Length: 240
Image 1 (cartoon, one colour):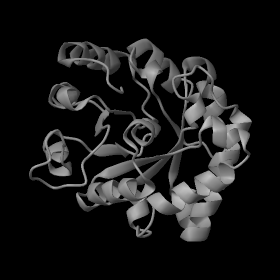
Image 2 (cartoon, rainbow, N blue to C red):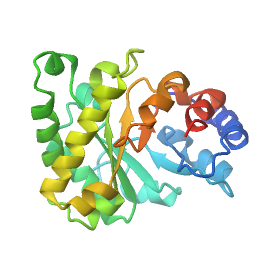
Image 3 (cartoon, one colour):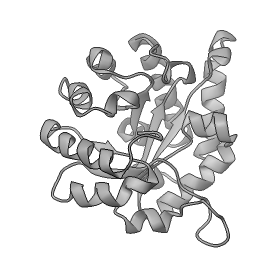
């Protein structure tokens, strides 16, 4: 949800999602702001919709004003945590090393982690997408075991397609998803690579979701702006 929705708006959206998101063959996760997590958790009880957080601290507790620990997230019912979103990389200068540390915190807490990777427009125009994605994947997965990867979701989000209304073509997205899967096969095993969920994120909307999600290596979507309205979000899920 990025930095959108206060607790009252959260309640309205969650109630709308429970009515409109009815697909049973899809795993649905919502990631509200920290301030809305308790309200979301209460309203999602009895629902198939899972709860996640948008970020986490690398610290367990202590004098880190403004930070939120993995224990805090788990205590309010979060099962998933997003780390390494491009906006965290861009605005808060988060490195692959820091993202890797955050991912490990989530996994140690027996939660699932959604790790984001993606190239900027400048990097794509320089034709170094493969190099950038390879470095990011190796960096964020450093030290993780095959069993760890059973609770890891990779989200490929080309930075140039986030919030711009411009999405990667299905061919462009599928190419990078194949690259990521092959790389995980080389780093771990093909068995791990086949099982891992790799999502596409970047201006996903009802109009392009079906084509993107029909690609062989695209297993799901990390949805931004289009998930802020129940009918729009449901429109993305329903074609699956």
